[in-house]
Image (tube, rainbow, N blue to C red; front, side, top):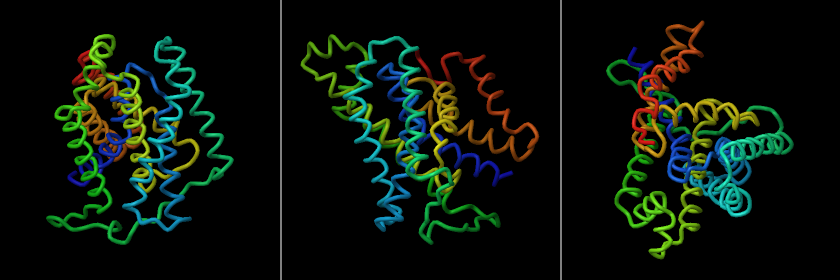
Length: 283
């Protein structure tokens, strides 16, 4: 039981890193970016490529994945997505899901349809015995990374000047512009941060779930569930929601394998029935 909870929590922390960026962009910018999963896929392929082709160590491949997704997202935000900020939700959904289809086609053309393997360093393989039970080292690493990301995001949004500017721009763009804030630049930084976190999550996910051109579609469902359960724009909500869903998904597949894949959806319905705005949602 303890191992199931541990594995579920580790999977939940992977979902958190993948989804918190969408929670930030959707909750703070009111932009429905269904292409978020494509940036996660991009981060995974960047990590695999730089490790295999360039000989990057794993700990250097992770920031490379973050930076690649963030930088490419800036190009998309400046040239394409920015035009949709004032568009209807339907237009945002149709366009961004189209980007996922294009990204999947490009990934298939460049890398093929085979599952990619990430060569982990020896110190992240295997398990350690704690109280007579084996705990996977890589899953412990995932939990540590997620906790670090949570701390950095909370501190950045609540304690820094940039965080205050982001909150001000979200609350009232016109007033923020009147105070001299460059709202366009602030939204660009926010979008890059969210996409970079997706890239980091994609790189971390390769060892757990593999990587192929369908990654952007497969994990988009999980990401949307986490954001819905946690509440828009809430880092705490994303963390708690991802942990609950990760544990529920792994426990369901372990204890009720014939119905395990559906339990996460039942959990989603039950939570939203009681809390329609999510666990920590305010709007």
